[in-house]
Image (cartoon, rainbow, N blue to C red; front, side, top):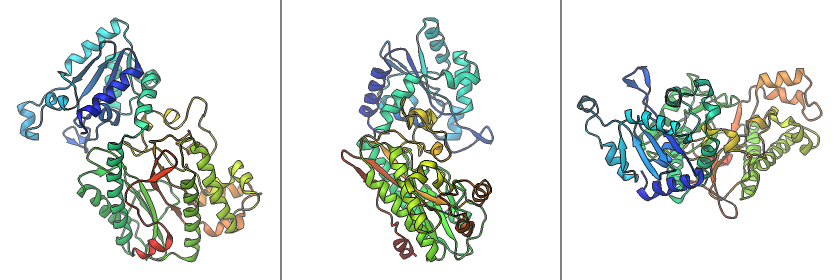
Length: 460
């Protein structure tokens, strides 16, 4: 938990922006793995953490903007609970640390909400992403379950995003802790990889670094020799000499701030000449994107710049041809780069995406594309000082996509399909780092991690 002043200032700003009514912030519940009492590792809702700061299940906060009141609802542990959990700090004591003085049992919440509805007081809530919280909202507010997302408060969504998007110094410090742990996770993966090991065995070692740091994973580890599958999680596939491993992983600190890094490395410590050529293309595209980061720059334009650099490298390799700007404008490069260049990061590894990509990454005037490739660009809006985001270009050789496009004679003015087919078993390469947008550019967050082909090889 940060200081009391941090949370009271955040709520004060939120009240000033929302301006009227009740703000309803739901914490998360514990969820059973295979029966109710055998629970998954608890993860608190990120917006609840941001404004309330209490990392504990079964809590709801109400901010009464009209009467300038803040209330926390939750049930204290009973003696039966304590037998299983041991003594824990009371909700009232935790609430005091975050600047909330009024605590009531959960049973009192329904009456408060019904009274507010009877008075015609607006009740603002965020779109629920968990079924149990959605059901609660449906019951409390008499809104059909299927209609909840459409009834969520756009005013509150925009207010939350406006605050959470700009990272305060204490948040940046916490993110850098997460990235530091993530660097250690990547080093464990690179140094431990060897022929005969399975993806799962390697991923287990990486996971252990995150847990032993006192935190956990910010998302399930992506670790695979089939790097052309964008989110391919580890399996029992055995690593072999000559293959590359793509490892995309992130640590989450005890305060739940995220890191997110990707490296692609050879199993036996040496890239083949072709692997190194493709790796260098991705590295050059990433550097071009990094150099373009600054406040006021549309991230969509940074993405397209990286696409052009990838396409230039592919043309030099003989896989693409023709005018590069025209090729990118037509989407020909998406045979090799099907996703977006990056995303916001903070309390969530894809920060605030439960609130809607159209609000987080776009604006009322900049609308998300529906085109293949661009539709997967999560962030397009102009960058602002204080944003934290990832830069993660890649090249992915997907045999099924190659075959479909070649059969359809798609973009034949820009793609040399006879050369492309030689790469159908290549896999994929991604390089990813995390950046803070500064007053006049950007800053790499966390301790540096080797990323040139030669430096990656030297780690073995």
